[in-house]
Image 1 (cartoon, rainbow, N blue to C red):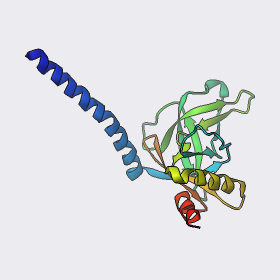
Image 2: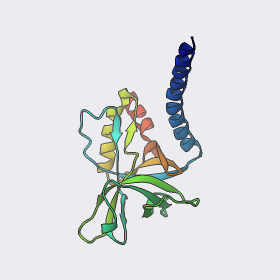
Image 3: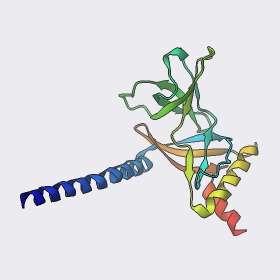
Image 4: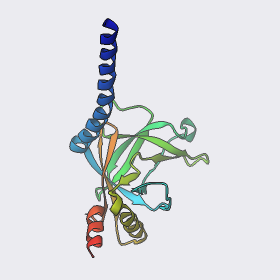
Length: 191
């Protein structure tokens, strides 16, 4: 009888743990959206053709390079902490990059190095962890087409609105000239 109670107790404990982990992940992302600081990142064109990617827009970013003192101290793929600032137009720029997690109240983003120069230019290319914007299946292909056209049109400004808190980032929206891509797709589908 006691082995059945023990087995039932273990089962309940495992079930609760399996519920806790995804609930905690969702709560953390929602907390970042609600209480994080919003930054606008200017996007850059990338090749959007990949039938296996699913229903989202692939985003690339224009200002993802930082100059450092010595490129030999850095390794591609390592985790870094990116300190951000806003330029005069309100768009996010990299202020500095560190291997050490900040202990004070600075705004920072936990990211990965995508490339380190090896030619003496001392440049780090940062991989921002918000490169996919998921959308409803019926709107994703239209959104991808609109996004690609907006990047080719130099009169339009396309950017991602990202909420950042304690190094975590959540992509809130993609905007073209200040209008949500969801609204643009909705208007185009009504035509």
